[in-house]
Every structure is written in C-alpha cells, then in structure tokens.
Length: 290
Image (cartoon, rainbow, N blue to C red):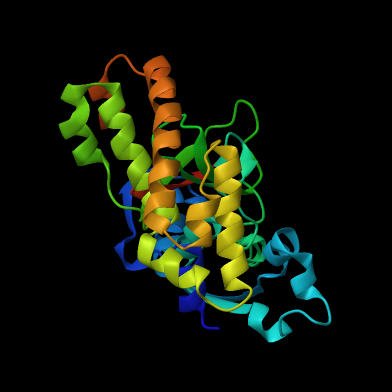
C-alpha cells in the first residue's frame, strides 16, 4: 500500500508545507554556527527526507497472527514517508499519542525510529536537544511527546527556537473561545470533539475499517484501545462501522475528563479556551555551549 493509504488508516496526515519558525532563540546567538537554534530550526523546516519503515510493531501488538505464515504478505507492512524533517518528526510523534500515560497505538514505532535516526544524523553530536509535543491544551491527559539528543546540563546557558507544525486535527481554539461564556463544560466539549475527530476522522476511519489487512485491524485496535482508556462502549458501533456514533461516545467520555482537568488547571473557561492547541504541534530546538 502507499503511504497515503496508511495516512488514511491512521488519520495522521500533516501539511508540512505550512511549517514556520514562530519563536526564536531566547539568548544572543552563539559563536558556533552549528549550535544556532534558529539555523537548526530553519533546516528542520526546509530540509526534506524519505524514510522507509514498516508496520510490524503495531501489527504485533494488534494481532500477531497476521505476521505468521498464513498472515499478510510482508510487503503489505512496508511504508515510505517523505516530507520536511520537522513534518516527519511531528508525524512520527503523533504515532505515540497517550491517554492517561498509556499508548494508544504502536503502528508508527518504526517510523519514529527511522525519523529519529535521520534527523539525528543532521544534528551536531553534542549540545542540542529537539523536543516535539502535541497536546490539546497544556497539561491535558491526552498528548504525544518525543525528543532527540541530550538534555542540557544544569547551569548551562540555553538558547532556543520553536516551530509550530499543523497537527492535521481540526482547529478548536476559536470555537472554544466562543463557547467559553457557557462554562468549562462547553469548552471541554469543543476540545474533545476536535481531538477525537483528529484521531478518528469519520470518512478515513470508515475506509480503514473496510480496508484490507493489516489496515482494518490496526484501526479496529485503535478504537478498542481508546474505548478501554476512556471507559466507553464503542465496540458495537465499530463492528457495524458506525464511526459517527463511536466518535460521539468517545468525545463525550473525553469531554468529561477534560472538564474536570480544566477546572483544576485554569482560573476560568476563557483561560482554558485561550490555551487550546489542538491544531498544532510544537518543536523546540534547544542548544547550549559545548
């Protein structure tokens, strides 16, 4: 299958052409050009690469029998990803979404490995860390986080630059702000609906469930994992590929969790809404003198 089909199956399409540097280093530029965070961020945003990977880790978790002699043709596991280094980092990190600290899926584990190795080969050997994070709002119980390189030592003078990469999830911030007059409940519903819509876009999820192996099993397992982690009951809906009903149930469960969490973290519904970041992934480049 092509990489596009995998994107349909896993609902993680990114538009890497929209990448831009939006926040620059916090300290004066260093004399070592290789440790200039702005330069490194620009390189991540503009340099492209092709990474070959396979779905074996995800399939092994979802249904190991598909890897046996009577399982899928091994060629059905092969995938190729192409894009900017920043886009690839973001895309790979979204494969590591967690709910309450528990992984949702493993189909992109090999992509994370391949992208990590490719990006690391372009970075200085020391004195740099690249952090990637997606979260619906700061501190949310669902997130995707990854990082490359060493951590800065205590006392080091750290310089940084930040990229924001589209997540491929429907934007939520403006609608959350509009809903904030109706309280935390209204804000949490908007954010939860957009989060679930990003993880399980209805048309793409339906196509995946009707697709060939291993795509159909990977999507079904993804729903099953979300179902268990959110204490929902979407099994019958998924069985008849009623993804709208399944998503509505998941959204309602996630909204309840978001509302409780937002009340603890924010002074007001408006503050919570203004912190929403469903539609973007942050990539932070940090450097320090070696």
